Image 1: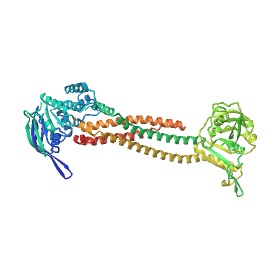
Image 2: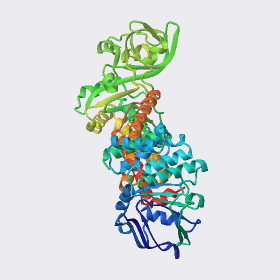
Image 3: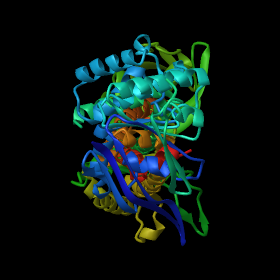
Length: 232
Length: 406
């Protein structure tokens, strides 16, 4: 079953009279439970694609269907709801609330979903346990290493059991040893049935995914499957 | 998202950055505190001016000798001797309904001793009506009685400053002897302090019977002035006319411009005072306006900076599913908590400050409700507006732009 359908998506930015085509007729599909990497050099349009997939932005034309719902046609409030319930973000810069405990950071999306405090804390604690930070629940973000912060961010992305996890350069700000640890977590999440879309410009990171979509100048250049060379 | 959750989030956000919260709160505290303290001190000064004028006596009219023309030469003010005790008695016995009290007075400075201490002070020869006309009240003992005047007695009532100069603070001198021009007087009472220094410090005064002053101490047969108390504030003009015509008749002067005495009433002083008070009110309004402006700009700045600094946080909250409305409401609640909290502390600070300053410079302590409402209303309004406005702008940004904000 196709969880994500992107068909003929164009995104044009206007700055004054100058039009920049960030995405030019991009089409692909992602099945439920896939682990896909989107690769490309900077300026290729991969960040724009990530924003559209994450319902942070809407396409200028074309269709983006997530879980049988066309996202491009939704209101701002409805988009916020999609981001809350169907998408789990993992950012390159972690984007944790400063001076806030890991537990509260993980619970934040559940606050906006209107889940009771008790339930939030219970779920957040379990999620932190799952990413191996059971002993760090009450540490604030500045007391954690980069890898630990990213694991908190992953736990946060899972808090609403989203349809897809969107990771934007998740290992860009952490050491390579910790980066392997993060990628192993993503792989285990895939085994649990999560759909993962990861944006990266590093081939070594892309090798952790099942499938790699190469993007250049706003167009899909090629797609390739990682077979035996896929990292485990 | 429920309101209680929003409230909890707001409190949490305020608690997270205590320094930022304290700074923003301080801006509001100082803004509101300054306005309340300044306005209250201004009003205290105004009240103090009014009090000291009213302290001169209710509906007071003073008749002074002077302006006597002998040929082309006009006598110096106060040097004339044209008013007598008989003039005062005549006004009193005429029983004008416009005049309630008549107080003839002899007023001179001289040396006074008590034991080894001596002072140079004002001696006022008075009658019992002096207390009514000049609002004098007794701290201890009695004032000069009619019997003291008719009996020509050597008794004295001291002002509190004289008491402390001659006997020291806190001593009750009743029954002691003071020597005025070397003549011994028995102290029969002490007046209550009126404070102030305007129009001759009334605390630095010794009262003796007018008869004794004229005959025994100074050897004169005229009076320094006659103070009249008009029956009501409205009858001041009538009282001036009644007393004026009687004195002209007694002094056999037909032309009022040639009068050998002059009169001025408290209403003349009050007219001057009300123009002073008007200037004060304008000054106060100016001070309040400037304080409000300064306080408001301070609050505006700190709120703007606070919210702009959190643009990335707003972007993150939106990316995680917060609706624009939720974000704006949270920031609005934060500003309201800040301004209300800061407002209450500022109010307490302003009131405390003006209380202690009033005490320190001995002004009456007044707090006007208007200044509190104005200060909290304007500063609070600015605080909430400038907490809400940048939050709305940040919430209107797309989450990507907000997240990328540096």
